[in-house]
Image (cartoon, rainbow, N blue to C red):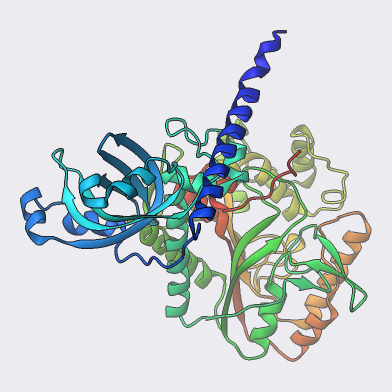
Amino acid sequence: MNDKTNLPPVTEAVDENHIIAERREKLAQLRQNGVAFPNDFVPTHHANDLHAHYGELSKEHLAEKNITVKVAGRMMLKRVMGKASFATVQDRTGQIQFYINDADAGTESHNAFKHWDMGDFIAAEGVVFKTNKGELSILVKDLRLLSKSLRPLPDKFHGLSDQELKYRQRYVDLIVSPETRQTFIARSKAMASIRHHMQDAGFMEVETPMLHPIPGGAAAKPFITHHNALDMQMFLRIAPELYLKRLVVGGFERVFEVNRNFRNEGVSPRHNPEFTMMEFYAAYTDYKWLMTFTEELIRAAAIDAQGTAVLTYQGKALDLSKPFQRLTIAEAILKYAPLSKKEYTAAQLEDKEFIRAELKKAGEDINGPTLKNAGLGALQLALFEATAEEHLWEPTYIIDYPIEVSPLARESDTRPGITERFELFITGREIANGFSELNDAEDQAERFRKQVEQKEAGDEEAMYFDADFIRALEYGMPPTGGCGIGIDRLMMLITDSPNIRDVILFPHMRKED
């Protein structure tokens, strides 16, 4: 092994430490000379607005207008050329160039500028003009240093190339990566669209507890904590569902919540232990109404964020403008299992032992707590997940889930053992889950009891018995439809991001060494 292979990172660290030491010396000098971090400068204009308003004007026309502006931002590029210098400054909207010379800015200010560093926040008052090369710039009359950057920015040609570092130091990623900034701007626009859509449909936004005495509303492993003052075990929320349905009982007929859920499960390109969900409930609706509404909501969010519902995801077309497919679990297996090189007949999908044998071949633990006593519906679902789910690229609702895996959903009036439930899949990923809500208190209590039995048999994700929720249902809940949308996964689609961490500003990481 060559000992020199470890030299570059060490050298980089030494160089960075040297740069930081130099910049600290500069800061010490600034402190001696007066206020090192002034806060009395207020910009009047932003970079992109200037480009939008004046970018098309000729050099002569701009000179005639004599437009004075005040602009501030982070210095991203710097060129010193004797008696004239250029700086590229980045604010929240974009970048613009400062032109600094002795005649206009003054020799003292210009000389001070020559000692400033990339990453510093600088401010200028000056006149908008165009250079001989036609670049919109600000001829600086008054120049100030607002905030000293002690650490060097990543190399402008390579940016922040280490993916883990991009997630861990998102603040640096946002400074140097326009693509990252655009991702989160698009996310913000999509969220604004969703909220607007919900309010237009008569939904009221609410906030429910994050700390639960009983984790409920989903099949998931919770994070456990302890409340010292109350001396009781508590759980971080796995879903807001049961609290939102309590509000429907209370008379709020249309409610929604956008907030965090926490699930103590694996980390993957599609899973983060803390993630954003939107759940909504509407009285006097059912799962069919929900599917239509959710489809419209997602389509509108894409259009408002990206200007179109016809997207590209990871190089492949994704059309959200067309009606979403609706298939039962068995129909989806028959249609998509051949893509996994599996061919089944409708009769085979009604044979429990056949499906168990297929699942065993696929490496599933058929004697584990989840599948050991599974009925036909649950076995079909497991086979769907193994053979068909990943192939659902186009938006597809999988409908009519078995009752045994849907403890909170209303059973069909015409098909025993089947619930009025759907899951929405796009690009092979679950994006939403919804159903006609179970509003029969006695039926719900019995289903909770079965969940408790599963938990006692070793299923960590089975639900607890929530006596207060049963009490709420006993007061009566109107017919209701409810749905949860995985916001982070939806944003992956809208922003063409391959990993859930790409759309979460500060994803969870292992502790630094």
